[in-house]
Amino acid sequence: MASVVELEHQLRELRQKVESLAAVGESPNGFAYPQGPFTDRLRQILLVTRDLFPGPVRVELQDDPEVVVEPYVVFTVEAEGDPKEIVRRRCVWHERLRCILSNLDEDIGLSINPREMA
Image 1: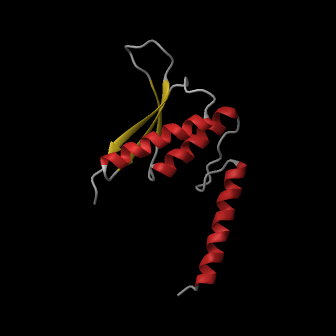
Image 2: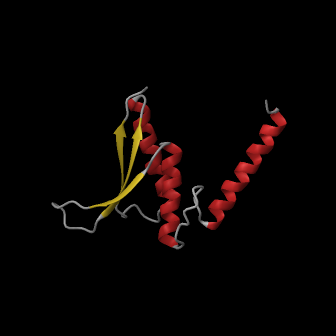
Image 3: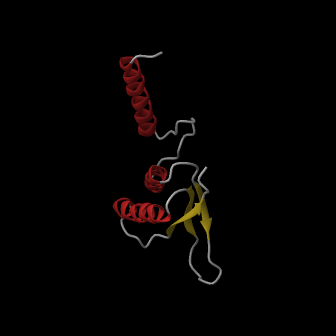
């Protein structure tokens, strides 16, 4: 069984690896993100989304046939638990996006699919 000291050392190494991957624009699975202002913001939004809604995140371009505007980006996640807590996390998501985006006129949305608790 690993000692506390060994586990702390492993944790530090993993944190350093994640930080170094983020610095060069790679995900832990080896996918290299394109670089640029748009992709930097997209990566920041993905990090916020995964922080608040752990699990898979699907990113899609959608359009509304009733409204003639450019397509918008939708981040789709799954969430389980108390609906009030899910709504609170959704509000936090929007607050944190205000810190990333220069304006909220950009067409970005969050879709939450409820998941049954196991």
